[in-house]
View 1 (cartoon, rainbow over the protein chains, first blue to last red):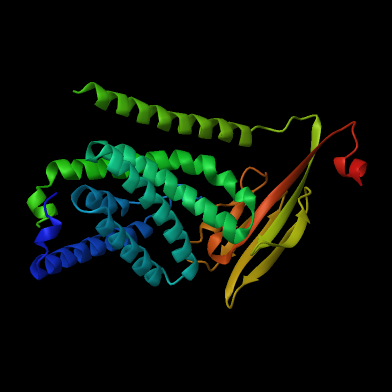
View 2: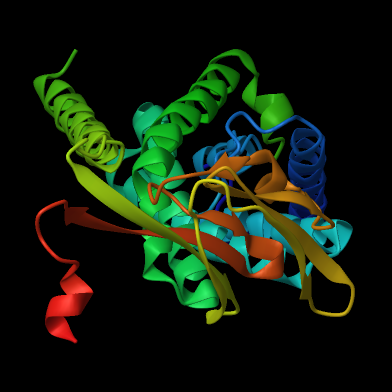
Length: 179
Length: 138
């Protein structure tokens, strides 16, 4: 912990808010840039999910609550840019499932296991999206995508997890979380 | 290296391998080829918002092109050709439904999630000597 709750001066609050806003911007930028990449496999839900690096990163450096706010800000803002309300629903379901799994696992395992945490986050993200897809289309057969999404989730989750792992190893904490 | 750390890593790795294995087995079952001594009747069902819009028998030689409207100005152009069905044009943002190409089996459905549109192939397998199941039950 780099900060303690009893040291909450207005200055640290403003600093923290600004820092979280910067991270939300970074996540939004990564998300938008990724959306320009052609899909790896033409199936809904198969994507790298690079902006999850920011969520992993914040889990390692600050409270889970802060990471959740940044994630929600990124999801809401990105669906404004995409201009589709339905994509907000999918992103929210995936994001909340993913976040719940990662925050819980992070509490149990800690940042040494960030790659595993990321993999399970990706798996739960895909699970959340399938569940919302079944709810929206009212077709249980959408679950047919699950095996492919599970395999791609392990691969993409490992990739983003490794990104977060090596970032943590090579980026000085003074730059990453100057609180 | 502390022993408990190894145990956790081992457990997590095994859990992930288990998930991968289960997915791979499910995929193999999904993609299993239909045996040649059985005739398969394929019907494409087009659902929008959970409601069945249309049912098209996918017989060889059947050809059709039509457009499904969605909302105010959304559309998906659907083509049936040579026992296959697919979305050939759409104005959804990601056009993933078009990129999914044509399908000819019930392995996985084509979906256009922004337009809440799903095309699913329903297969009914009948052995040549046995009458269709529907004839027995009806």
